Image (cartoon, rainbow, N blue to C red; front, top):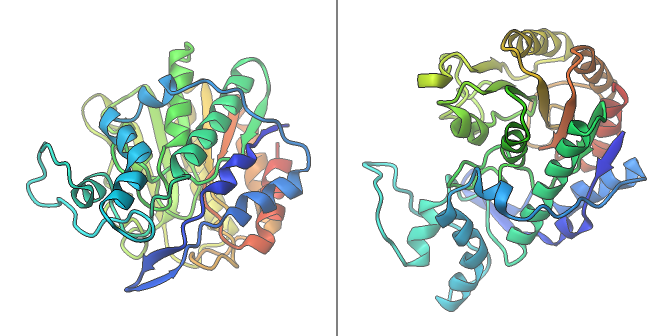
Length: 334
């Protein structure tokens, strides 16, 4: 399987995040990507396809914010990385705001996703990996893998959060549509719900989103991912959320994945994108499922058996010592 990776992603390295009331070391470390790359061995640099595919999904003002916020933060005399502390959750409306503090809240959903001077470039390179894997499959590969880091599925069209800045799988899905694929399926099997992906395609029927994740009643992102969220307008019925309780192991997860794959097949999807998170691992430090390393090969085989051309995009997974083995196990299923 062709695997795409750009070491430039490693430059994104925030120092701290706000977690459960305390500032703690940032969990989404560069060592995550380095561990996966070391296990894979052979990877390819992606072709640079520019900003046009990104702008097909993300708001222009938000892109400008990602590019300029670190410099504006420093100019305002702020120490450390860019981090919001106030959010427009009541009567949110379009306002022209210039102060960096206001923009940091306008374009984010949490205080756990700081911006550094290297964040835009690392996220841009990650998107290019997702696009490269997608175009490789469109050109005839059975499956391809994008080692994208930082992850992407919590990023909306105009907001960052959950360690995510650009939504790689959403950009890839739109690129597949623009290449002529009539309907795209997205299977999200990260421990946390892909709220940004859901938001982006919420009112569209041409991209079907099925997510298996920890119950948002107990886990981040809390406000998205409940079973009654099914989309609206043209997208009504094109969103499927399958929340699972903490402690879920392979059998229950596999049954949920079967439901998700069946829904994607029933939709008539011609192309599959997988948001793959290895934070479902039993040893993950910020998650609470119970999958073992060997279980990922089973899940990979089940997805491959669906018979759809498949691009796999890396999302979460924070047990760094086991991360490479878990990713390799999943890819072995293909």
